[in-house]
Every structure is written in C-alpha cells, then in structure tokens.
Image 1 (tube, rainbow, N blue to C red):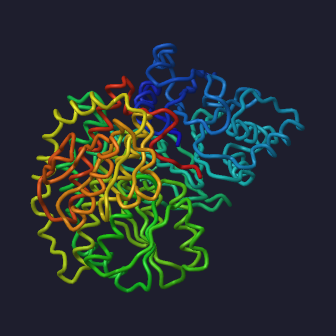
Image 2: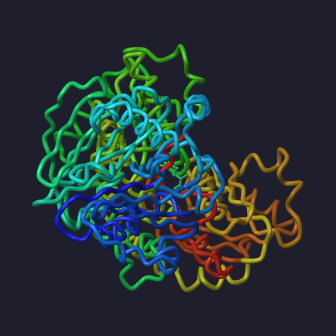
Image 3: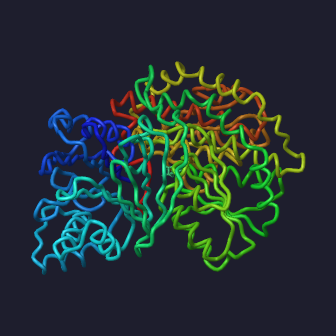
Length: 589
Ligand code: F6R
C-alpha cells in the first residue's frame, strides 16, 4: 500500500530516490519523505500531500549523500500529516526506517519501549521498528543482529528498509507478507517495493521471499532468513519496457491505459502454448475449481464462471478473497484455486491462497506484475503482460484478464469455443475506442447526477458491477451495478425522473429480457444509456459496440464504461489518477 525505496551507490541518492517516489506514487499518495546520509549526519525531509507538492516545498534533491531511503504513504495508523510521514527515526536520530504493511502488535511494543524510556513522536505503527532497531543496537548488536532481533518481535505484514547513521556502507531490508525487491546495478544497488522504482537503472532483480532479510552494500548483497541462515538467491532479468511509465500525450495515466487496450488485449492472449496447456491440465485434473480475487479482478472471476459453465461445462465457485474463509472445510487436495490479481500483492488474495495451500489445494494464478508474491506462491501462473498499470483504477488489466480467460476457456472447451473467436478482438477494441467524443458529450450531460445504475444480465452482469465500481472510485458518484432481472425486486423503487441507468445489452440470448427491463425503468422516468450492438428507441443515449463473439462482449462493453467514469471525473474537475482514500496495491487486510 505504501512504496518504499533505498539506494546505495556512488551517485547522489536524492534524485534517484525522488524518481523512485514518483514512480511508486500509485501505491499511496497521502504523504512522502526521504532520509539521506551525508557525512556523519542523517537528513530528513517529509510532508503531507503528493510527491511533487512536498518536493516543491522541500526540494528533495538539495539533499547530498550517496545512500538514502524514501517512502510514499497510504495511511493506516495515524493521521495524514508531516509527523506521521515516513521515514521515522529512533530516539537518538541514528536509525531511519521506512515501512510498508501493518505491525499488528505495535501497541504492545510501544508500551514496552515506552517503559524502557524510548520517546515516540508519531502515531504510526512503523515507529516501533526504528526504536526496536535502536534497542538492539544500544545493547551492542550490529546492524545484522539488530534487524534479526527486531523482525522476530514484529507481528503483521511488513517490508522494511532501514538506514543506520553509524553504518553508512549498508542499507538493511526485511520482508514478511509485503513485497520487496533488490535491484542490483554496477557499483550501486536498490531496494524497493516495486521494480518500477529502479528499472531505468538496472533490470537485474532479486525478489525477497517471506521471512528474509537483506543487507545491501554498494558492491554486495547478503541474504539471510529471519533465523540467520544464509540464502543464495539468483537474480532474474525483468524487461526494461516495464519501466515505461510516461503519460505520453495523454493528460492522465487512466486515459492512456484505456487507450492501450488494443495492444494489451493482444499481448494477454499471446501465451506460451506449453504453459497454457499445463495450466489447463491442472484445471481438468481437479475435482473442483474455486476462483478468488478482489475488486475489478473479482469481476473478471465472475466472467470466468459464466464462460467456464457455458463452454467448458466446468462449474466453479467465485469468492471474494476477503471472504475466502466462507469456504473453510470445502477445500482439499483435489481442489484448484484460481487467483486473479493485477498486482499479485493484494493481501486478501495472498491470505486466501495461503489458506488453500494449507488444505493442500493447487494454486493457479492470472497476474500482471512479474515477480509478484502471487506469481511466486502459485503452482502455475499465467501473466497478463499488459505492462505497468499506474492509474489507480484497473482498466487495461481487466480487459487483459477477460481476454486471457477467454483463451483458457477455449482450451478447456473441447471445441465449443474456438480460439479464432479472439482473432478480430484488437480491431473491435479499436472500434469501441472511437466512441470517445460521444462519451465525452454524455459525460457532460450526466456529471452532476448523484446516483447511477448499471444493469446487465448473464455475462454482462459482472460488467455492470465493474462499470459501477469505476464510476464510484473515480468520480465519487454513488453507483450500483445490478443484475438486470433483480431490479424489480427492490431497486426499482429508487428509479426516479432523470436517474441515469446504463444498460449493457448487446444482441445475445439476454437481449430481449434486458430490453424489457430497460423499458420498465424508462417508464419510471429513468434516462437509459444503452451499450449495445443494436440501437433501440428505448435508449436516450446509445453507444454502439461492434458485433463479435458473445464471450468477448465484456471486453468491448467495459471500455465505454471506463471512458464514462474517466470523463465524468474530469468534468467534475477531479484527478482520476489519484482518487481519494485509495491506493493501487492493497497490501493490507
Ligand atoms: C478497481 C481496483 C481495485 C482492484 C483490487 C484488486 O479499479 O483497481 O478494485 O481491482 O484492489 O487488485 P489486484 O487485481 O491487484 O489484486
């Protein structure tokens, strides 16, 4: 949820750390800070707000020194203010810490440390880490022992990077249930939550596993487990392209990523055939499939359920990762869990698969971020290959997931769904994007409406949920996604004169029934925005999507909904890339 970065090398650290902060801002953007060691002093600058706002005030790059750490925050404990921004220092100011995660026993530890005379300055859970390190250090431990002793005392999830004034030749890191990667370059090394933070400098990466610490020097890395056992880790090479995070000609990342979809959908269905076959074999050999995910990825999971049932005749249960415990007692060694996640770091998803693994189930995954925890924890994972998604709202990752699910289902369908149904998808995605001007017009008309409804039937129902989620999270307008047939069971009471209802209704076997539901709403004064292959008098606004195979309609339908949410947000003069209270990667429960 937060972004952490450390640098040690021969260059001035602050510009590199600042660049890393900007690239990790999607992980949390309520405050940020930096600590650099220069001469024999630690210099800290931090504040509340976005990285560039804080930088305008503090000018991070005035910090000299070739070793430092930095942080972008998404608050969990303590208000958003300068004091609670990281880095946090020990009492004597000799140790600085940045942290991503939650220290569950921080109150207990704070009490212990206070009794021992430590003085706290912030309300954060993180600050206990700085004091615990100091406690070890004061008792004569070196950096290594101080860190090993500290991590043993922490409960919860954490990725930590720490800097010691008296040991300028090292930065220390530790990981449990929150991502941490080491990037190693020539005479310089990085530690960060995300390779994006440093991939412009090096493409050689080692991902820490849970219960590992690392001591990073200018020319050397030392990995140990929490009990002090040395670990040999081999670097992997990540693609330089994943560092391409510029907005190009677009005003926001969100709209840039919406426009990338012809390309990203194509990349998602370009899979290694042997790996795809092994993935499908695991599904075929299982007794029961459970799909789990959160947010937008959960909506892809619901689409998987419809497609698996219809074309592969495979029943599956789709469960929100945060509700996975409702399956307790059902999962065993013959079960397969399919976890879907853009980031591969969503805590709820990781907890769900950990529980499934304890029941000896097999774990398959569909993930975007290379090297993420979910990829590494899965028995087999397929990558969506859609490049970094920086906009907080998931857009291109959703269509990539749905495209890849189509490919998997085709493979499992014994010829009921042939892969060639995906052949013209790129062209059709391009066609849908041409509705942009029209959607801008619609957005202007409806941007002040307090409530929106999105309805669809069958495979279009998850798309209605996704359309509502996009609008809520970006524009802050109340929105509900509904199964079209459910309206008359209560929600119809809320439909009033002028209420906008987005009806997702291409011509398939759901068409007539959904159109009837649209007519019922129109009769009660609703303004109907139809997303369909076929125009109808019932629609007050009509957005045409091209005809194609019905299993690919969710990819085409969601794009106008993404654009609608984006342009309504812009119309309301809010920043769609940074919705309030949210962060891209939810690494806390
Ligand atoms: C919505 C959104 C979130 C994520 C959810 C899961 O636009 O971005 O709902 O979909 O937090 O994230 P991943 O897919 O990374 O597990």
